[in-house]
Each structure stands twice: as structure tokens, then as C-alpha cells.
Amino acid sequence: MRTILATASALALAACATGPDYAAPARPQAASGQFVKADSPAVTTAPAVDGNWWRLYDDPVLDGLVADALAANTDLRVAVARLAKARAALSETRVGRLPDVGASAGATYGRLPAGQRAPGAAREDWSIDAGLNVAYEVDLFGRVTRGIEAARGDLSAAQADADAVRVAVAAETARAYADATSAAERLAVAERIVALLDRGLRVTERRAEVGLTTRLDTARIAALRHQRQAEVPAIAAERDAALFRLATLTGRTPAELPQAAGARSTTLRLDTPIPVGDGAALLARRPDVRAAERRLAAATARIGVATADLYPRIQLGASIGSTGPDIGDVFGAGPLRWLLGPLISWSFSDHQRARARIAGAEADTQAALASFDGTVLLSLQETETALSAYAHLLERRTALQSARDEAEAAARITRAQQREGQIDSLAQLDAERTFAEAEAALALADARIASAQIDVFKALGGGWQDAPPVRTAAR
Image (tube, rainbow, N blue to C red; front, top):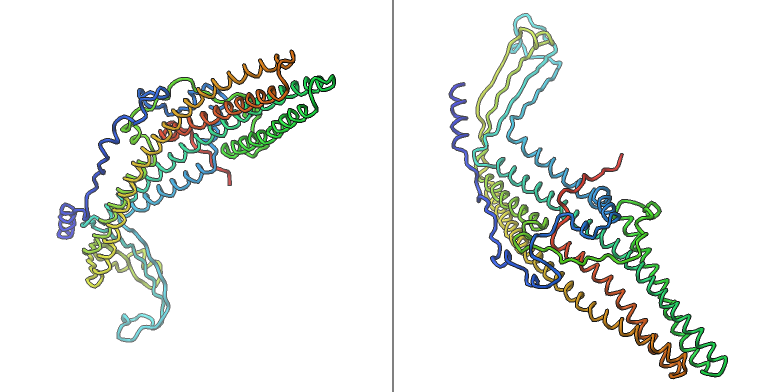
């Protein structure tokens, strides 16, 4: 007994994990610096973006909708379920560190040969056997240890995946709300343009009645008015679609969406520069980068799991039990047996298969490393692209604002000139058309800017910190 315990202690002290030890991959040095588009007046590098970035819009309705989405979104419920599965897998793997304890019992009825029968025992009788078995694997080559490392990596990756879903859910909820508000503003602009054209049409019709213009001029401005009127239902449909999308994101049916979600009629605007931080803060914050790094760690650990199959498995076992003709003999003072000793199993003929598994695990690790590098590069690309698009949209809006102001002034002048008979209705029609197009283009630019702002926030990877717990459906 002492010899076995001493042997087990020596094996435990000498144990070492096979396979490579994990080291976090290096990131491109340039990835930690300032963004290429950080010099835009639309952004600021300090401080980094707040996790709850949607609060920068100072809209309590948006804050409530994002909170609802982070608690009830169905995609998040799927991610949380996968996280629970990964946590259960880690718990199962950790069991490998514990002894395997089992009990057995059985009863048989039969006849023993005369030479095997005890003197005076019946020729035919019951035989009852019960025992307790204990087995413990000495993790000499780290098969269990590396398996736990891999399971921990999978769990951390699942956690990061859930955080990535939170980022997407928060961003898409804000985008749906922004699309609904911008559509409401564009709808108001379209209706205002139709009202202006209605007034112009009435003036032209009165002038035609007294012979100051022709029916052709009336037909032309009426056609323009109907064209702009036709845009109203399309914009209204866009607004409805955004609200329905918002309901789904927050875990509701369209009929359950609160009225406050559609009450705002002005586009979301953020007049202050967006805090973006730098590349180092971005890579530390983005959940997809963290998930890729943790998958690489798990893949590296699985090389050790596969390598351990090249070596023998050592188990320490113990068994105690008793056999007798009835239960009283088994659990009473009947004969007791016990066994104690090591068990070594080593399949020499399986080395070819084990080496193939090692090669496969190494290939998986190389793929995970490439995936990590690609995720880092993609995160920088997405951020730079979003910042560039946002900055250029702001420049475009400035030009469109000037064009809209000039078009409005021109339309106002032509209306006065037409009333005084200085110009014909065709000139007024051109001015009204130009103003209508400039007004609609400016409203559409505001909608695109709001969406571009959300693209920036989504690329920056904020929104998973301090998220509320996800509600699970009752079964």
C-alpha cells in the first residue's frame, strides 16, 4: 500500500503536459496606433468610446429600447444558451481530475461442480456479489490538463461571441430606431414639398383661368406634384419596416411595440465629435478579436491532448467487495475481498492514428492563428471604413445644406416673380423642382449620417459592457 502511494506521488510530481504551451500571438505594431482617419473633425481620439454609446444621443426612448433588446433579443438568447453549453462542457472536462467511483451488485442462481462447493453447502444456491470500485487517472502527460485548457478557451470564446452579439444587437436596435426617426422626418419633408407644390398649382390654375398662362404649365406643375406625392407612401412603408424591425430586435411582436418608439419625428443627431480612442483600445475592446484569440488558445491546447495519446495512460485502482449466498452474508461478517494497484494501458499499434490527430490539431491551430490575424485586420478595416464614410458624409451634408438654402431662396424669388408676371410658369416649375430635390436630398443625407454614426460605434465594439442579464423564455 505504501509503495503504491509513493509511486502515485512520484508520478504526480513528475507529471508534465505534452504539446506546446500557449503564448498570445503578436499583433501588428501599427495596429496599436492612431487611426488613419483620426484627424477628422468628426471624431476625437480621447477618451475611448463609452460602452453605452447610444446614451450620447440623449434620447430616453432609445435608451429603453436598447435595454429591452439586450435583455430579450432572441439572437442573444441563442448566444447565452451556447455559453451555458460551453460552461457545461468545461465542467464535464474537469471531472477528469476526480476519481471515478462506482458501485456494482448482482445476484445469480446456479449449480457449482462438486469440487468447487464448500463442504455442507447446497449444490444449487444463490450467489450475491456487491462491491465498490475506485479508479484515478494519473495525468502524467497532461491529457486531462490540456483538455481543461481547451475547454476553458472554448468557454471564453463563447463568452466573447455572446458579447459580439450584444454589440450587434445594440447597434442594430439603434439603427432601426434611427431609420424610423429619419423616415418620419423625410416623410414630413415630402409632405411639406407636396403642400408647397399644391400652393404653386393653385396659383398657376388661377393664372390660367385669367389667361396669364397656359394649361400646359398647369399640367407640368401638377405632374411634379403627383411625382412627389407618390414618394410619400414609399417613405411611410420604410418607417413601418424600421418599426417592425425594432419590435423584433426587442423581442416583441409588431403589435406590442410601445407607441413611444415611433413618436420621434426628427433624425437622430450627434453634434459632438465621436470618441474613438486608438487601435490598442479597439483591439482590447472588440469581442470578435477576443473570441478569435481564445479559439487559438483552445486549438493549441488540443495539440497537447492529441500528443498525450502517444504515451501510456496510468490509472490507480482499488476495489472492495464481498460475495455470499444472501444479503446478510454480503453486508454482514461475510468474506471480504479487496484489490489495490496501478493499471497501465499503452496501444503501440495506434501511434499512426495518434500522429495523424496531432497533425490535424496543428493544422487547426494554424487555421485559428490565421483567423485571429484576419479578425485583427478586419476590425481595423471596418473601423477605418466607417470613420471615412462618416467624415465624407458630413462633408457632403455641408454642401447639400448650402444647395438646399440656395434652392429655397431661388424658389421664393420665382414665386414672387411669377405673381408679378415677370417670369412664366416653366421657370417657377424648374425652381420648385430644384428645391424639392435639394430638400429631399438633405433629409436623405441626414438619414445616412445617422446610420454611418452607428456603423462607427458598431466597429468600435462597444455595447457589451454592463449589459443586463438576458431573459430566458419560460418552458
